[in-house]
Amino acid sequence: MNRRPGFPARLDGLAQQGPAPAPRTPPAARVAAPVAQRPAGVGLDSQAIRARMVTRLAAAGIADARVLAAMGRIERHRFVDSALGNQAYEDTSLPIGLGQTISKPSVVARMVELLLGALPAGGRLGRVLEIGTGCGYQAAVLGEVASEVYSIERLRGLHEKARENLRPFRLPNVHLLFGDGMQGFAKGAPYAGIIAAAGGDAVPQAWIDQLAVGGRIIAPTVMPDRRQALVVLERTPREVRRSVLEGVHFVPLKSGIA
Ligand code: SAH
Image (cartoon, rainbow, N blue to C red; front, side):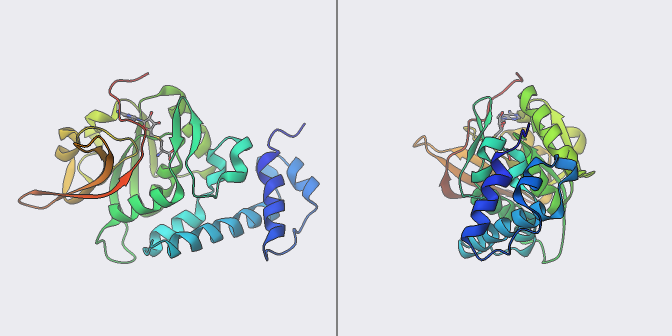
């Protein structure tokens, strides 16, 4: 019984619509193969689809080569339900259970690019804190551009799901934590970057306290007109600079665990 029919089956269809090369093995054999033993052909197909997503991200204004490379490497289809796998490389947010969503690729790329900020080309960020692990996708992307990633999730079910999703990637620098991210994670501080995947009414003081000098916080925040916008806080030796950027739609930042 094939338990993951959606993604490879539809990928074959997509690949045939474009100029992608013919599959190297018969689709039926590839669909039936368990994840660990899939022939290289499946990986190559999804790689071509990701490459197209990266082209679209670049056309939409994402310029940082590190971000584009990370988005091209991390297999987003592995983070969503197999029934949604055929939408994994569209620019859309998708449900991940417990009322939460995985952000659109363009939003992940934009936020990670903002987090890298003025870091010189080729450089790697130091320690990063992510609030809201969700399915673990953005944590994996961050793992490609930062030396260490601490990602905290308040819903146990999603924390466990992310752990499972991330296992095959074997990312020794991505650390998943279960807890209330409103408090940050003091043990890993100071952070070169803090990124929130959920929108609160204000950026918690704990995050600012745990930010290194020269570091940045990227956080969707509810504005006085009740709409959310991306807020960037930069810590300089003397002050914390705040910029408000474009409007966004994130799930709410909530306190406590569940
Ligand atoms: N980056 C995630 C997006 C998940 S959606 C991904 O790639 O899938 C945002 C997540 O933030 C939800 O899972 C939600 O449960 C979580 N969240 C909300 N408030 C939180 C808090 N105070 N601490 C930790 N996680 C929180």
